[in-house]
Amino acid sequence: MIEPPFTHERYTVLEPLGSGGMATVYKARDKQTGAVRAIKVLDESLAHRSEVLKRFELEAATMDRLSHPHIVPLHDVCLDGEYRFIVMDFIDGESLVDRMERKRLTPEEALEVMIPVLDAIQTAHDNGVVHRDIKPHNILISRAGHVFISDFGIARCIDETDMSLTRTGMVMGTWAYMAPEQRADAKGVDLLADIYSLGATLYAAVTSKTPKDLFAADLDHTIYRAVPNSIEAVIRKACAYWTSDRYTTAAAMKEDLELTLQKMKRGEDAGPGFAETRPRISPSHDQAALRPLPAPEPTPRREEHFRSPERKNTTGLRVAVVAALIVLVGLFGWMFSRTYDEVNTEAEMVEVEVPAPVRKGRIGADDMASVEAIKPALSHSVPEVLNVGEDLKIEVDIPGSKSYDRVIAWYRPRTGGDWLQTRLRKVGDGYAGRVSITRFYLDGFQYWIEAKPYTDNLPRLTSGSESAPHNVDVRLN
Image 1: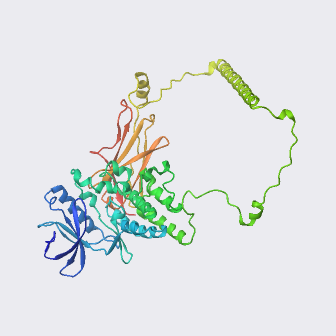
Image 2: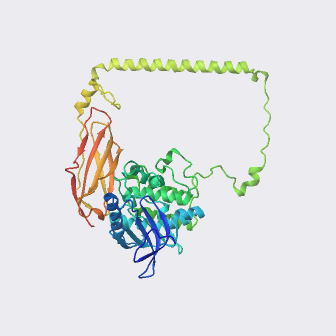
Image 3: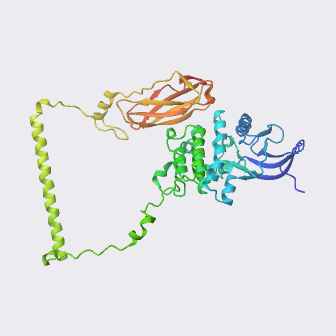
């Protein structure tokens, strides 16, 4: 008899369900209640590593904070003894990726799966939890058709210092669902990264294809060929490159999907994107449209109408030469009129020094004199108080210079923690972005802004700093 890899006095292991880089999930029976559970057991080889264990504990704490009909519930946690494990409900069914491989979902079925997921993610965000790993593999569907989202906090349980954990499946398997800012910095992301992953997951559910750089869809018009127009609009907004262009909350995205589903059930959807646009013949005019047109009356021609190919080419060249002469005459006339105007208005002209355009890299001494005269400065107004549920609109002006290509707002709860970031985009003469204020910031919100130039001679500008950020009170409406 083969010894089970995991034994416990309360649980009887029935079979393994799957494994990842840091844990294995087993199907087990609770000896006290008789209920079937799913137990996630931390790999023994990692249990002695304090950083991995801390993240495993954080996952358990995260799940314990969340209570929602569409989030897999937590039943028990063991963080000492021979094994470290988390006990959850066993979902008797399949994952969304299994469903997609078994049969292609209709657009309506895809929406019916994603709507409860969005509801669950909104609850997580309201409790200050960012999932970071939303994908079809982590969406479970029971035999009764009930939808659950699982693996909250699993990204936090990956030991990023050990490449052997991330090289096989964990990062590569979720890369297609990651927002661009998460690909650059997995730690410094907020709930808007989850919004992107939700849009990418919706795309996969509708098309049964792995999403490919949806934030750059404008460069490839075939990406949305198989997606209905109304769903395409939702995915485009969720997967926008700039975080300020995405849905600010999962609830807002859910509302649009519910309206889209209602339209589809009424048969009002416009159909797949990039539909064929050739003109169609109206049924009431089929015969007239197909009737051959009468032949035109022959036009009497004279012999001189016919020219040899050589004469045709010569005529074309002659026309081109005449046209060129006309352009030259017009150009000389314009130049003469400009000179005449300058001579006659010399007394009214005022000499103005115009600095040369600033290019990437170091700039010359002559141009530097003009830049120093401008003295770029960052201008920003700090709000007095913020309300839960609203967006903090971060607007920045840098008058006198357009040489700042990386303007970032760093933010976090006043109680501390890792700094999250959102990149501000160019809007008119300034920069703008926004951050959604959730219950996560009820104890206060703090942020600071930095602007980095793309020339070596310009200074880095800030409003606040990491050591002295702007502090704003947050209140419930």
